[in-house]
Image 1 (cartoon, one colour):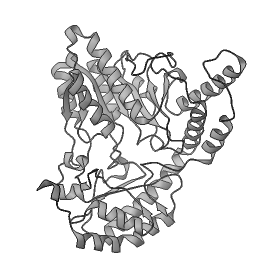
Image 2 (tube, helix red, strand yellow; image 1 turned 60 degrees about the horizontal axis):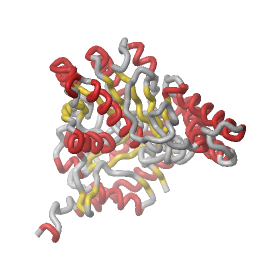
Image 3 (cartoon, helix red, strand yellow; image 1 turned 135 degrees about the horizontal axis):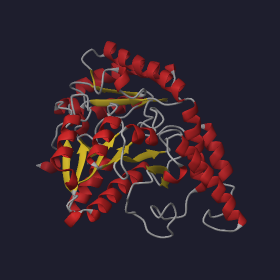
Image 4 (cartoon, one colour; image 1 turned 90 degrees about the horizontal axis):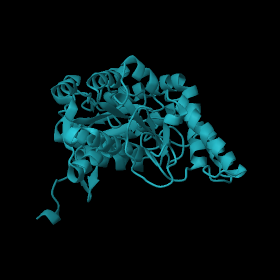
Length: 409
């Protein structure tokens, strides 16, 4: 199988597997005060230090979570609740976010709007999916006091466009508003340094970039653990209550083995970040050139400038084809990819990301995402390019699926 879906999950690194299996033999709750518990705590805190070092943060600022999705929920809900409740008459209810965000963000802000009085402001993006900074600046200047937070992707998980996080952080810092960045897709491909951005943007306490969400399984660690990197100055309400572990921000017994594996993966990826990004970018560019040659009417999505997109992301729309058809045909040929669409009850739905970029519904339904990782090789690229012409021809003959079913009649 040629695996080109590393943005969904990537194979665990040998270093992470070794760390996980070794840590599984460590007995003790890190909250216990006896020697067994303290040995577990030392391993846990060493792991926190290692993860923090890859994110430009202090160890105490790393809050381990169960996933990237939990990290996003904790950041958005926690910042919203605290800033709303601290504002005069609870006026800080607006949440600013770009169109085309990950559903971890979309579903979280929608829940806050439905259940907790949040007022949502969707910021426009340009034709490559990059947030319009002029629109962000206008909202911040219009009424910063009513804004609970700004949240945005560090880079698009779907089309790979790198977002102007530093510039957005500077705008938020000047307005005195907190910014959360979902860096799940960017972590392991781009350098991330919380403190450097806060320093560069002269961020006051509690404002500017204060929170960054990451996940272990996207960088070669295990599934089931993520982290919210939370600046010391950030004020946040917890989602979970209990033992008060992790600064009373996230209660619950911590998974020492998962943290150790996360740390091992983070350390390994950081050590070879420059070399890996060059290698993956070369494979990415081979894929883009190959698709363009084999299917001339295919349309690249995201920033066409290599410097403006993730080194491991390729995203195309294939006119007249259903993305799901291409996925299944390629899978049958031994190539794993993903689409830019969600599927509800078997009916293909257009990519909300591409629609936000101003693309047609047909474009948005014919999307295919190819993503690379540490295990990707030239052979994976060759296998995809060999399978693409027949898969495309068959998908084109099938055309676009009807948007109605017998249940709609």
